[in-house]
Structure formats: C-alpha cells, structure tokens
Length: 363
Image 1 (cartoon, rainbow, N blue to C red):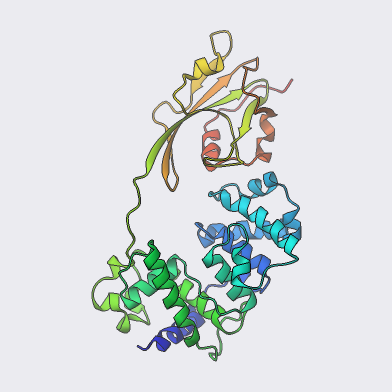
Image 2: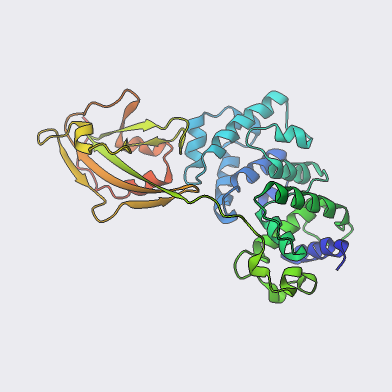
C-alpha cells in the first residue's frame, strides 16, 4: 500500500470505529488542552470523569487560573503524576496573561507542561494546523506498519518517527464523507484522531487485532512476524524500592499532617507523620507508656505502591493519645473529619482505609 493509502485507510477505519469523546465535540482550546493534560499517563475511561469535573468546576481557563493550588490538587487527587496538576494551574495563568491560547506550535510549547505532543494536539484539534501528533499509540502503529526498529525512547527514534508522522499528513484524505464530525470536520485533525484511536483499540500493545486489521496485507510487522517485537524500547534503569513508615496520630478527634515540599514525589500534597530515614517511631514521637498507644496497622507486610521510578513499601501506625506529641513546625493539626478537604497521595488514601473507626470526639 502506498503511503497515501495508509492515511486514507485509517480515515475509513475511523469512520466506523472512532471513539466519541466530549472534547472531540468542540474546538475550544481550553477543553482540548485540559483533556490532553489529564490523559497523559491516564486511560481514557479514568480521565473522562476528571475532565468533566474540571470543566464543571472551572468552565474557562480564566476561572481555572483563579483557583488555588490546593483546590486543583484536591480535584486531581487519584490521578497521580501530580506535577501535571501544578503545571496545569501555572499554564492556565500563563494563558490568561497572554490574553488567550497561542495559535502557533512554538507558542503552545511555551506553556508549562506542554511538550511536542500536547502542542501538536492543541494546534491540530483546536486550530486545524497541520501538526502531527506522536504519542505511544502512534509510535506503535508506525513502528509495526513500516517495520521500524529504531528505539522510540532515543533521540534518533523520536526524530525519525516525528518526521514520518509529519510526512504522512498531506496524504490524509479530507474529502471522505461520513466521518465523525467532532470539533473538526476535515483535515489533519481527523487523521490524528484516527491513528491514535487505531493504536488504542486495534493495534494495541498486547494481542493486537491483526486478524481483522484493514492494514494487515501491507503491514511489515505482520508480514515478517515481528508484531510482538515492535516498537523497540530501550530498557530503563532498575526501579528502586523505598521504605516509608507513616504514623496517623489520633488525638481527641484531631490528627497531624504536613505538606510535602519540592524535590521529591507528591510535591504540594499532604501526608501524616512520616519517617523514611530509619528513625524508631516511638523515639521520633517521644511515645512512652503514658503518652499513648502505638499500633502497627500493617502487621503482615508493608503496603506496596508502584510509581514510575520507584516502588514504595509503607508501614502504617496508629498512635492514639490524649496529648499532642511535639512535631516539627510544618505540621498542621486538623480535625479528622476535615481530611477530605486536603489533597492526599493515593498511597495515603489506601493507608487511611486501614484505620479503625474512632470513638473520640473533638474537645
């Protein structure tokens, strides 16, 4: 199949199989940008609800720009990769200062947290610019169809795939009728959506649907039996383990939390008392027999929580006491019932589920 046939076949496939999503029904750059940021490292099914909640709470970029970091992090809670939420707020304020979203790739890339892919997506979907998107799905489709073995996580690979993706755009058949109308009815916007959907639902990482694939006859990987080998990705450094000991202090209906600082995971989120440097918990809090009762809530094994570059193994303690132990100045005493108003890492949410109900009442 000629290179033009590849693009046109994808558009025909998209006509019958394209996914309907609310951010595809608009050309509003704010709604599109928000969806792209949320869907980074997030499946569509999970991100959909977050996008709707953000749009309901902050319908415009001007309203989002006026939010506090705590409010945004709280709304983001559960999505992970919290730097995305902080960048989202920063970029919203940039857009407001600019008087609106930039309409060029360079301008879009100047926004905090917006890289080549997100800039191309906004440019294509919102403004109809001829910019090719290259995400994980696109890498996979192109690598398999054209039989490209260059590792996708190398500078050489990124450049090669970006050039190929851009070269394919002129062959997108904008004259097809009956394609999903979405926010854009023609042009490269549809082709970009088509190739991403094709990778997400047809040419998937594991057990791709090769038997009913419209590109099967001309796919190099299928013809050469290399579907399982492509795309090639160089192995990353070994994931490290990190042990954490958390103490939930329960004192007359109150508990102690602090906000995590920069330079580590979960910046800006809140957590209970933490010991991750090997301190003995009882010594750290000055706990003796008359100071309170310390209970290990993970007696059999630590709770395992997997991040991109490290695996966290967390023990969780409950300290029940009638007097507040001395803590560093950055800790804040809050009512237990008010914890729902603070943005917490997913691991902390899991640990809090281990807490027994309290019979204490605030004084």
